Image (tube, rainbow over all chains, first blue to last red; front, side, top):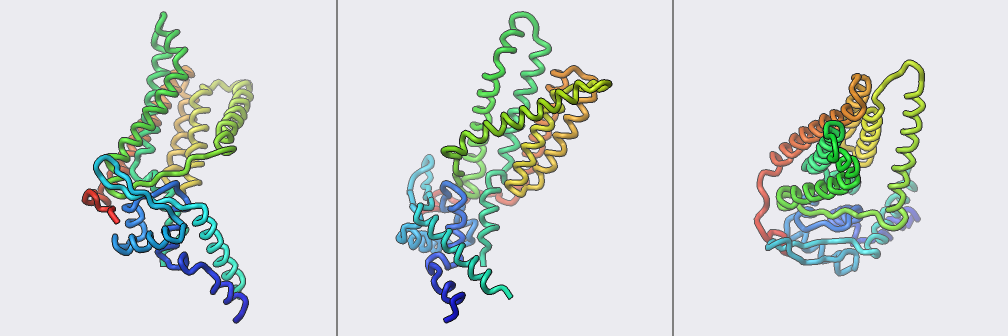
Length: 103
Length: 212
């Protein structure tokens, strides 16, 4: 396999899924965001977003905190240090791949 | 495929989506306008009280602005389109901003002072300086967020400061008028932005909708 293709194959598959990469991209520029904001921004259904968030949490990339604002349940998500590093690495790998495949 | 950079930019812009920033900043301008008006029109012992209360006015105004922005977001924005908390500057960056503000302020004041001493030029410096500094601040906001209306507000601030500088008004009177006019402009801008936001997001989702 060519080295540029191999570098693409090495990208983190968990982050490479478009919805999850958007979630991490959003959380990378804020301290935290709630479920409603992420749902509106990603355009996912509640169920799909829940699944993606759970996968990212299981990988240790985000932390999910369930709390209340008044009587309204609030699900807050924030990126972890590990998640930030993984996302930065992922972006770097993609950028390198694009650079290497330029004609 | 979703565009990560656009999502990040929209998330940064989200703080300004409801006009709360303009309302808050506008309120601060109106408070300052009232202060400078009182400074020139109040006499006797009250004048000394007003003179010595600028720091309190600024601190109290900043507190009121924070409360207003938070209240608006709690009642209007977060229930409709979600909650986002932004990173506050930590460590060395926290100290950098006041230093930068002091350096810029000092440079502007020195330049204006030289300009004012030029023969044949009689201008009210305070509104000119305020117009320049607030205009510069708006340009920084516009550059950081890519929101066009901040560029327009920057131009308005500069024009307003320039016009008042040559209006033959007394320095502090012209400053009070500058803050009043700019505060009203900010309120009007905030109202337009809020109206557009409420049109796009007329209803808040049902309570408890974010349960996973």
